[in-house]
Image (cartoon, rainbow, N blue to C red):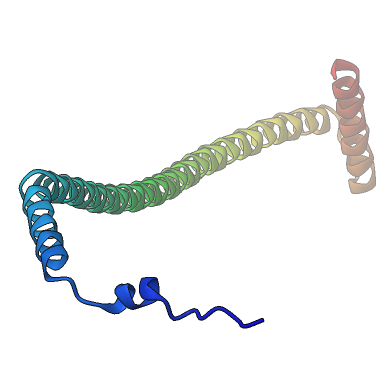
Length: 179
């Protein structure tokens, strides 16, 4: 048995050029290309351009919003820093006012203390002078009383001393009874 040959007419027609078929294929391709260019590619390219512009607009909006957010953040940070500066200034001002008030109160207290001390010294001096005057008066009274007793009795010096001592003892006893 002999094998059939595979190089038949179908295989040869596959690689052979048919001018009529090529013409009609080229005409169909160009017609299709024209129709697609006029009705499909224009709207497709327009839609792609529109989509590209929309995406670019969204990107531009996002950049603009990011720039605005950065500007707001910078403004917020500046306001925060200003607030901190003002708070520190207020605290410093409060400290200065407290120090000034403390110094003023200390000065006033010193002044009042000086006035009180001066008044107390004057009072002490006056009381001392009054006490000295009272002692003088009392001494004069004692001396007069002793002298009157001495004059009423003529005694010797030992007796004079004893009489003065007795009189002073009588006076101290009477003062103790009064106190």
